Amino acid sequence: MSDLKVLPTNPKSDILEEESMQFFKRKMSPWVVHELNAKAPSIDAYVEITSKDNEGDHELTGKRFPVQLKARTRPRKNEEHITVPIEKKYILNWFMSNEPVLFVLYHVSEKSGYYIFIDNEFKDQLNQYSPKWKSQKTTSIKIPIKNLLDSSSQNIIEKYILKASVFSSKEVAPGTFFKLKSLTLDTIQSFTDIHKSTSIGFIDDYLDDLINNTKNAIYTVAVIGPSRSGKSTLINALMAQPISPVGKLPTTGVPFKIQPGKENYSEILFQDGKQVKGKATSDYLSRYVSQKDNEDNHKKVKYVNVFIESEQMEQGLALVDVPGLDDPSSTIRNLALSEIISADAIIIKLMLHLISMEILSLQKTILNSYLLLEERVIDFS
Image (cartoon, rainbow, N blue to C red):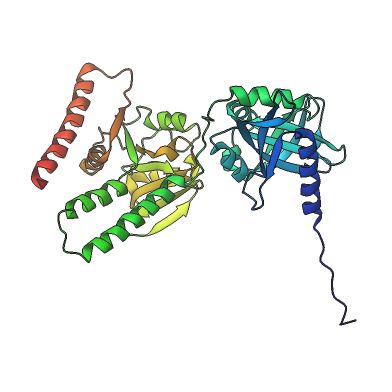
């Protein structure tokens, strides 16, 4: 028995993939289907559209489109849609394409196929029926039953491709900003190390500026205003989720920054250097920044960093919830001013019932903060 050799087997998934590819090639004929040997993360093939010439031969038109195939034995199906679960990473890769991707679901039991183009319309529909898909590992794709891959499909697909423009619905995967920032810093540092081995000194300042600019590349917007003016409510509205704690009592003198991240979480930094990782929710953060749970900041919190999966913030944006500028504590006011000085832009949130003198006082506070910034620049020069 020990001399018997186990024969190699072909996994069922590979058999279904091959079956779906052969089915697709038959439906696309006489168009040319270039199957990718090295499996791309979200593309199985490219299809080149052909047309008949005067002699009846098929020639390439120069138009092509990428294809992703999925085979399912018994996918969910009703009178309007056929539904298939897809990992988020595939959808993000599709959105990174410069051209619409044709997604084809091969129904193994029916020996039929259904298709949908991954384009702006698809993105809008996905955001509508599954608004939190970016924070999930898997989401469902709904393909209209009418999109059956049959004898009329080629005409429909060809018309779509011929009028399709460059795909403009790019999605940035969570964590991309800091990943690129880290790669950029590593590249600059490598060049700096090489430069230090030479006697060339005229680009020293340039390299220092490049490193500093890269480290501070994220565009920071500080949300400022008097206590209880609705700064936190505004931030939550901008983020479309409850992050910044709101309540009847003002927050303590603890600024916190909301920035792009690969996942939703928070980092609580204490004055003694200790750091705690937790949730990125207003209920959790309230215990560290609200007067109710952290009166007069007796927990000695220094700063709170909040990381959020956000397509908009992945472009390099951060929001800072700044303590009230009218706080009676000079320590808190100084913290607020330091955030204003370091910000690239500010949003001023005022209460509608503020009288003109209070508005003038706030304007003076903001002006003074920028004068401090100007003095710092002059001192360094």
